[in-house]
Length: 408
Image 1 (cartoon, rainbow, N blue to C red):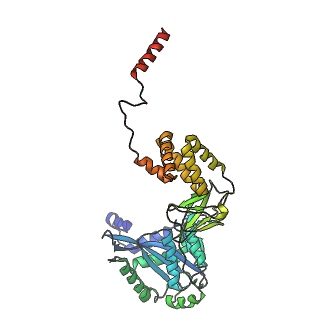
Image 2 (image 1 turned 180 degrees about the vertical axis):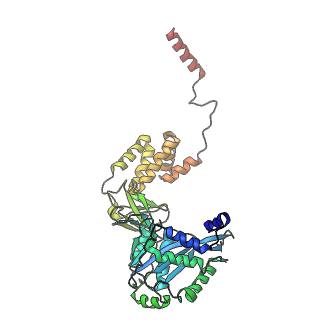
Image 3 (image 1 turned 90 degrees about the vertical axis):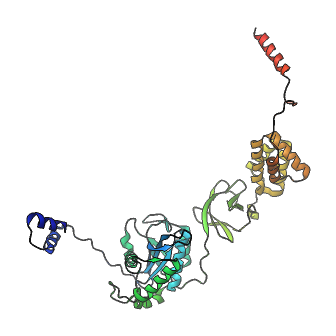
């Protein structure tokens, strides 16, 4: 258009714009890249992706915020499930898949996705590292994830096209007061227009093709997936890992090593980070409690525990007696409190901590908690003019005189 306008203004060109456009098209030397249509069998493949959703008034801030549009498109029928969320996370990404499978009444055998962090931790065309929660949710539904090549979205062109269609048709310029209102509007548009349209590639109605594909979907499991949180923990000297201020034992030989941990409201599972093998499964404990399996209790005192007890006796006899009592009654679970007593002795000084330990023994409560509270409530030390620890000034004068006389 700019070339045609310049020709008309500068050179008196009297032909129309279409003549210039046809001529420029003949100058193009690069052939368009071919894009083959990927055909899949019924129930074989689904493609998933995120896109930008409509503006919705946020219930907390009261301002309009951009939502996220999740889309799952079946490869055979092009039937799509469209879901709106405020934000994304590993669990939300997995929950959206589960909601989509429930709406479809079954699951496909393969899910094609790009390399977003919610699904793929480390992209690799041959051996990608999947997010463990996402991997387990798909396994629960009998689905295998197939990530695309990095920077190659054409492998999932069906869902990419579906996102563009959704953004340009029902959601273009729309605003909603609640996310439920937006989801209801989108569901109604799906039923009225998206499912009844004649698809441009298949030349058939989407709803009719989905009726053929639905029997080929895999049946849904009886129970939904039980979601969990996951992380990596280092096994402490007491043989336990910490989850939400509670402690759970690992097998012998894992002290100082890192383990993978999965937990929910009911259970805590410790896994081998290399093989994924289940090491231990514990029932959730309240804050401060220990869950130690009988097989994880050592038959002899560990060398590091003996070293901590030796350091306690070196700090003072009362401190050593308190630490011996903790080890005798709590076993390996008490090593943290023994280290805590030693930390208090280092912070406040052995003499002050020894007095606190003597008070604990006298009152019959030889615990770390008592010593800590005793030291916290102990009044601060103030300097006095007369104190047995302060020597007379005459002693310093005589010492200076002797030193001065020896030098002369």
